[in-house]
Image (cartoon, rainbow, N blue to C red; front, side, top):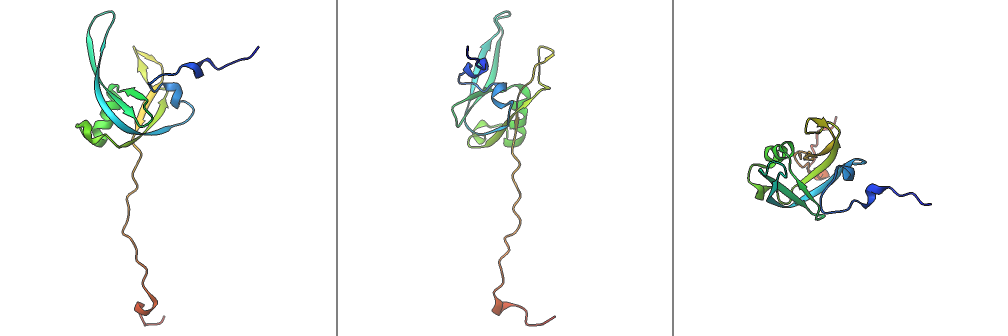
Length: 130
């Protein structure tokens, strides 16, 4: 009898915490669109933003991930398109008052580029010997 890891068969269009549990994943935002969810118990409609990445996977943004993107890229979602983000697993994510772990977003740091140093040719070098 063979043994399989059952979670390998949970495929779909959405990023799951299992997708980033082993290692961080850096992806590029390809699209952002609003989505609506209806709570089956209360019938209350909840509006969220959903990000589609360059690998066609989607992530519906919770409040924390939304605030991270707003802080880094601004409130207008057209500024998010083409931006790279790193998805990682955070075991401190809560849902319904329980620690369940989940996907968090981190914006990769951009290295500040210093001035470009141009080498001085020998003939332009200072003739004073030391």
